[in-house]
Amino acid sequence: MSVPACDIDSRNAGAQRPPPELARPHIRLHGQVDDSMLSAFLEGLARVEEDDGPLVLELTTAGGDAEVGRRIASDVRQFRARAGRATIFHGKASVYSAGVTIMSGFRPAERWLTEDCMLLIHCRRLDKTLTLKGSLNAERAKVEALLAEIDAGLQLQAYDFGSLVQDTGVGLDELLQRAEHDWYVAASEAVRRGLVAGLT
Image (tube, rainbow, N blue to C red; front, side):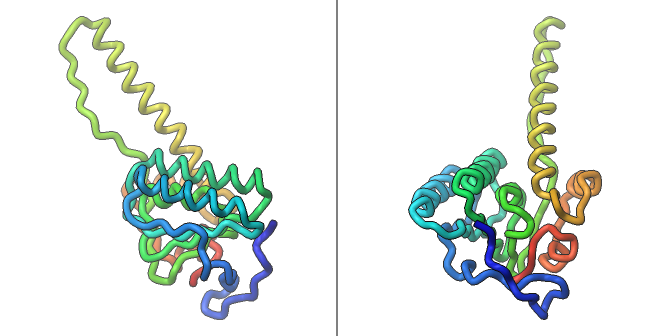
């Protein structure tokens, strides 16, 4: 099921009028992206399964666990493919870091932000100290394990970033460059670059 046709919103040239479903979100998530948020999401998703309209998710977050964000985004994609129903995202106030990962699970045409919302997009990070003090064979294994972890993280990052910018006016190369040093994106810029459909 596709999102209902929307009129042009006079506040944002070229932007669509927000769908009325945003006023009645099925799932409201706020705070840290963590296991508690995942539990709240899964409970809400189970309730949505019983309806026949679009899934509407509202989010405010300063970020958190990247893997939890990836899990929620993945479940959104699977729901859309399985149920054949629209999935609508509504970001309020702040959608930072892992919150943007969640947003990447929704299509750009089905993403909405409040006028005051700010996105924060940054590359995956590693905070680890590697101590090398042993035989060369043993220490080589440690280095190779760390490199494997980094390579896996880069692959996950490429997938998430690709989903975020697909069908938008932002190229992957530009995103990688900007996200290297934290990219704060105001709601108006997100609309202008096609990252979201419009503002509420």
